Length: 436
Image (cartoon, rainbow, N blue to C red; front, top):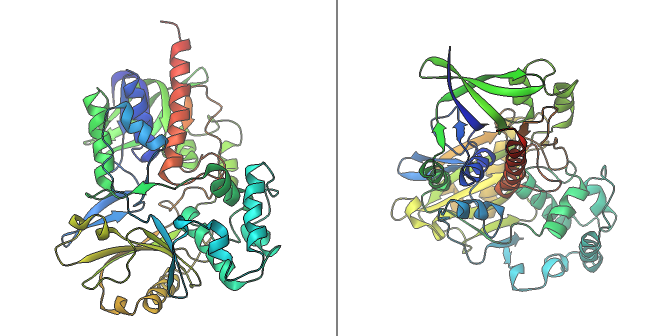
């Protein structure tokens, strides 16, 4: 084992949270080392080549006008995204509903329940601070106003599309916080080089400003002294090294970080609390291509009454270079039942595929590219909204980032970017307070 250089901050994991934290600290002029176990950056949201198709792994839609975009601007890195128009539509009983033209929840729900106006008013109440108690699920909350199966299906698929959870698993407070208070996900885009292109650009910006990124570097432990983390031990190219650090930010998730720390370094009972609190959320990602276009909707489609299918996007409508000429490339997302517990992968996948066959007869002629089950240690979300851990630890110079420590009711890459902004600010404050 050798001891390498000392850093202002070492960041464990180059997912969305880790990259954004590294970007912010590098932009602030700090000496940063970012360690990643994989041979690429991006974590659970990258891209891969499959027979000439650029196929995304995980997230496809990157939010614009947000903390995420702000992070890129700090390093003067352009955010290479193309916005679909319309961004989102609903497909209910075979018909497309575009709520962006006006009408909102009333337009979406009005044809199915007389309670549409009352449900819409509850979103206004939520903006004023009137939120359900934390234990009430979205399904239980909605049952107070309507029993209509189509309305319940729409809400279930919104929960699934944003949070990778079913309506009976997601707290209504988290659902309303996201849609009514945060007003999130109104603008987003697709990268014409696949989602991997976005991460590679940010990584290049980090390196250009002096930050170090070491891929294929597996972190094996943390070192401590007098109640503070002092370094990170990792293996790279067959060698074990310990890099010294004034601060450490972990994008590995609270559970993995606690195991790296060993014992009770993060606080008495921390590991047990993490195991009890965190509820990883699962989804099924289906990538396919067709010669004939299935539907005229360039953005994301959220479905009505389906078995497991929740949303779908035609990426080549906005970014044709993702597929060989003459192909329309799609990604469809399905959420199993349960999404926060064990499920039968084969049976749940078949239900999602049957949904696609029912919605689009042309799907039977599709070229299947991949079916990816995101669960357990590689989930869609490390914690379902409402089941997150704090970013802080018992150590004054160690913080978490990522989708297991999100702000309440937040989701997606935007949520990870926000955790990075908070952690980076705390690291900068800590560094400033230390004696020269």
